[in-house]
Image (cartoon, rainbow, N blue to C red; front, top):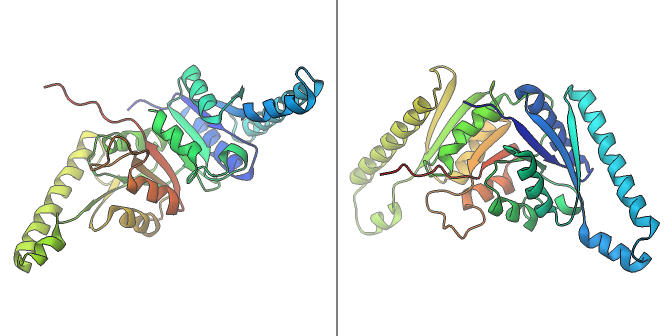
Length: 301
């Protein structure tokens, strides 16, 4: 398992962004990764300022320098609090573009954003910025909701064995190397209601249900074995029902402070910005959410 090497955290200086940058710094301290703190200065706002004040006005440069000082101060305070070196970057332009360009520049293997904020992070979960970023990037994205009091203790990893979730287990171990993992797989009997309507008897449906549970159990334990998880260091949850609801239920029941999900699921079309389960967890959960954004490459025939 390769450790995290480069973390990029974006801030708009809001309280929610401070939660995210603090978590990023704690992760950097825990994993030894290089941490970069960035802010995107809106290109449209600067253009509007030029319209009012004229090109080359001193006010524009003052705004840039003031923002740079705020970013440097935030980095200094963060570094002192978490005992890590914090590098900074001030970008100008659309937030998604700036984040993507800087992620490439530092070869970030984790992006960290707050769940709510002001400005370009104000509507992260439901707004277009996160959706565009998740659509474009193949880099994991951590959405932070909670104050970072301590390293992640219990991590719920949702496995549907899609190409996206296949990476989720490895990602969880990289981002939370000392946490206890709770591996969850939700299964359903395919077309159960239609089968009932067609007159299929309860005993036959129970047989299908047992088969579905056995297959989910087999695949979950195989995934844990392939990941090198040791017995007694993780917990299995094989549950029946809608994956979205079961993930949120077990996030609470297992007292998990991080949920790891794939960007899409088994049935997601390539055109979708987010899989429905992932979007539901982002919208409705209370724990931090780590999204695995890159599918596992297919095995050559």
